[in-house]
Image (cartoon, rainbow, N blue to C red; front, side):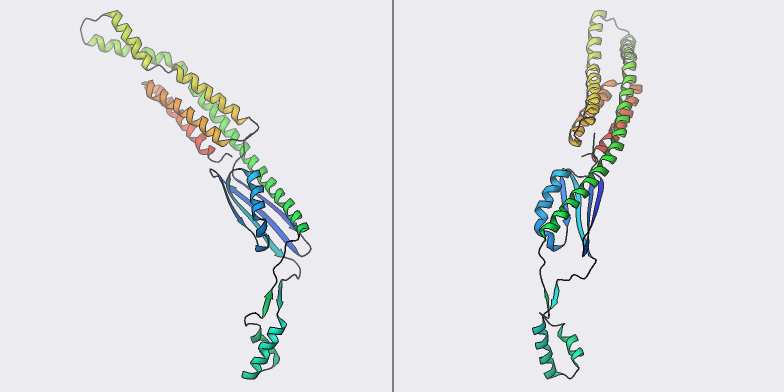
Length: 285
């Protein structure tokens, strides 16, 4: 089972005087990169929110937002009546005008309005916290759905690399025989006498340098390990990335040792499949 780092989660809470919307967006990142936006009243809860998100989401570039929309008359701003009256009395001394005109001017002066700082209602916050968990669950479900698509793609490409490897294994005796014939032809063209036993010894040494048996075995093991790791309970993109690096090392060695055009063409096909795996792995949790 694997999870993508790409996902979206949303939860909406309707309270008597306001509507609260919680949104989570996630993209790929090497570590947890969290950006939190919320009204100032909830800022004191930011650290606890970050801890919840870190525990539940692990990695990714995460944008967390809380939006509050008032749905009834609920204001924290009040008129500072004594100050406004004092402003109006002073204005009467310097300007003629009715009380309405003086009031319009007075409320624009400093301290005419008082903003009362809202305090968090802990019962309300507990309800909001439940909705935060619901948004996280929605995001993780989205990540899981995306991960299933990635998993299918990985399995297809691993099978493709394995099939190409089987073609290489079948082709290897032909390659070795081709190397033997080229060397023998080169020696015969020299038109010089040579020690056949010594030639065979040198030939064996030369062919052993280009032997890819170990690389074929290791690549098979890496392909098997990659598939097993996909099917484990935990999603571990970093581990899969390390395995893909080992796969690439064996494929590159086979390519450099092959010295045989048809085999090198197959190696290019394996490299292409592996590069697509590596690109997708950047998005795995």
